[in-house]
Length: 452
Figure 1 (cartoon, rainbow, N blue to C red):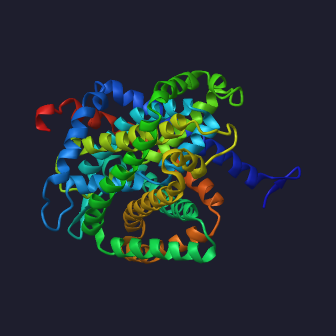
Figure 2 (cartoon, one colour):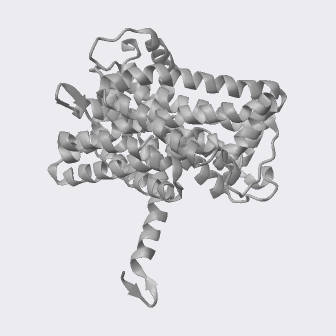
């Protein structure tokens, strides 16, 4: 260690870097690039939001070609990674630390993120490659194939950070939160970890087509089940809904007014809401572009409509319903102290009573498992890019085993590392997307609704 005047320089530098990269910097990158693409594309994400929902829902019943990944399956793989335990536990944390106003900034980050995800998907399909008969793509491929050779090291940096993020964001934190919601001792946790590992291994071993087939069945089902559960609580307290929305709008700009003075900082609402939105829907990270690259769709802009639907479903629908469930239920929120699933559990108990714990644990496990599998696919793409097919095969063997570690160990360090690596990925990806913006804007502005 290097010490200067009694201080550890390396440790202080890492703490500074972690604060910078895990804090406001990624959000600034996302918002400014989101505003830029929104204006340049003539508000593409707003104009095509209704069409994207209709297009995605209409794809559920379309038959796919054998041996190929359909556009809807690719979207479900991406959505399986984004809809995770953060949609429940993370939203509770955002409410307790940022107040109801955090939800408003979650929405802002979602609509800024939609157009970034559109750009990622357009670029990913345009610059993807075909290896061993299947399409692979993502930020490292549009950096490698779309930018001058001087930028090629950024592709490797993204892929390496992606591998670390897959184990932290995609596995350890998700498994830990999901299994912890079940309760019980070490034996229960180990058993839960083994179940997660076994299912993950079985799905990943089947490659793109098995992952797509699994996610297209599980993701719509689990999302619908959770939405019905939240509707039960909100429906019983429907008279509180206008007040809840009032708290969200008022708290976005004056959090002190709705938290009894506990949270007085506008920044607290903004940072907690925006960071939760980014972590939840992964817009700007470039990860979901890897899933969309596997699609047999040849039209990048048409495929990108699924990206709008993903962010809308994940953040505007599911995260918002979690927040409204808590706010409408009237349960006490201990502002300033980080909350987790226990806050949502109290809200569910208003209507579901003693069953609320079991129902919430079921949803946490379904969300967590789907996220582990979705991120597992991203890991195969990153490892294949850095280490080739041997690295990919080794990853498929090692990754499921990490579920057992995540189930029994504390995830505090994993959470910090995930924020750090996600921050680097977001900065690298949005930088690359901005450099390729002229290509994206041309594609978006030439797109016609008649083609949907």
